Length: 208
View (tube, rainbow, N blue to C red):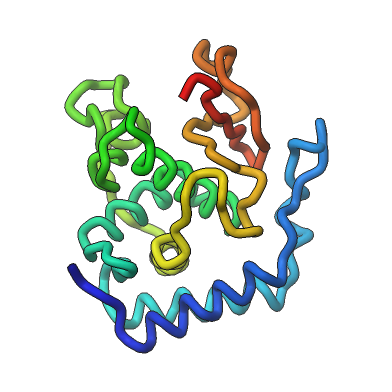
């Protein structure tokens, strides 16, 4: 297992501090809908950006922490990047949290890479669409990738049991599913909507 260097640790402390400062933004039914990205404090976003730059400066991949390897950390970052690179910081973290909730669930593989790339060899039948859509997955937005690496590192360092997420993601609870707001998958009817963040609706499985 690979553990963090001092710079990456500083990143975790910065992001952890930011998480404590910020409430979980959601109102709903709209009590299940997060406020827009524009309401995020510029100083907070700048702090997250700087933390992301520190992580990126250390390696081409996200750094593993709390016993996670660099390989697993990169899988988490890839899942977050390809699934949510156009979302706000909280939206990207939410996708990462879903991945970690699945890792903790007996219904899914018990490794991050196993969850992210589950059924990748089955066209349009994988768990995360980017993994089996037939398109080559290339990281083209370096700035976004650098930030996502920091968010992935933060999630690994602050990993808790499903339903015990840090305040930053409290409304997600034990969510293990999500979909974009422009589709209406059949499976959503059997799940419980927990929160909407950006263009994604998140669900928990009451049968789990």
